[in-house]
Image (cartoon, rainbow, N blue to C red; front, side, top):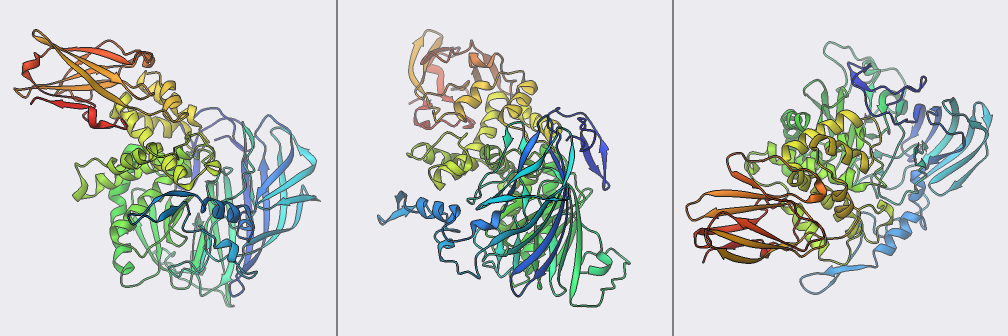
Length: 629
């Protein structure tokens, strides 16, 4: 993270509320913001007004002649890009039900609901005035993007200020944010304020909002929310006035004295985050759980289900965090909030909105997915519009492993089985696309979700097959240490793993992510040769891979024959020292076959198998194994 004033490249970590220098990170520059916002909420009218003071630090080497803001809630209006896009995708048939009915490519949360919103149900964000360094600016609104051509450009390494007055109407809850969600939460306030777009080494990212992903500028938030005192508010950041608020925020021995009047002013401060979310409901129950160095907060509407499932969730967090910390890095803030709200699950810095009335198993699953986003969206913060497979995929990988490692009934099972099955269905369909496709520009919701979540997760699981699980896991910690509070891209991740493993991996990204070529290997023929046997292996698919080949003789002796891919210029370590391993010459990617000589007579073979771990995403495993008759 770059220091906002000095522009120097230093790494920072949050310790006891202050930022301390730590080990050096990559030297890519980062823009920085500092928001101070004060909003007044008219809850009965579902509207609010706000004032925003923004300090903007141009740490880039470029002169900025314009800036852009996101106005996300303008998407919740009939005829918007989000509305049209949802209805157009809903016309695409992606399959059939068991009784022969067409299955359409709807996002069932959105469908055609936006087109039916009435004027008092739509969302909007209106900028009433905007000043740059105290001077009024002209601006243009293109639906969810505000374009501001500056009267005075921002010089490289300069600091500047913007002051804005705005008003907003909270939309009926459809996607992520809004009022009166299906479980009865009054306000889910995500994407609620005019937000400066990110400018990075690739330029501006004024991405229109059509329901998919986000990308934000690192900064500090100081937010005051003035609202009817009957509401309990959960938010990103640290509450600064718990002695006036109560509602479970107060510490032991603190006396709560609320000011007179109808409203309360909730003052939150959030350091080094790239967004700010809040939610409000009069009936929120607030409980906490101390974890390793921070406090987990839980806000939910109590009923016969949640009164049991949410406290149970709280008790599971310390065990889950122990696994997360060991495998993905430490959580750097002093609190995290799990908040009932939204339309499923959606991550934000220091908080998540999740649906909360389901089973204990379902609640734990969605909580772990959204919390893992604190690493791969909250801290590592890849541009998830450009690289959704790194955001959703890496998060899915982490979620699955955390759940399986911390659930007694699942321990010892392979966590990724269903994820692979979903990818295989995608690969067999006409809807697979290059996983480097911009998240908004996938042709189908089906293709996007399977590429981003499943194929992205398999990229990491299969990477363990290529370089070894232990090497990959240590690489994930190195990735966290080097790139947290930055915006790493795909090549940045691959370079970390190359350094960790000593193996070239550019081919792996190019084939598996940048193409739709599939992996398919098979046993072509078995030829007796005296005291030995030659097995001809065939690459049927277009993506080359290294090969683990297990041989078991009739006495039960196991030997793993390892065939590296020559493109790797290296080999993975032996993952199981209890099994004899024989390293063979590399397989050239141009060659469709490879003759493997094994030191077992044909008559003594019990079984042979390509990739017994099944981590390789081989789309047809029916020809991977042969057994003695």
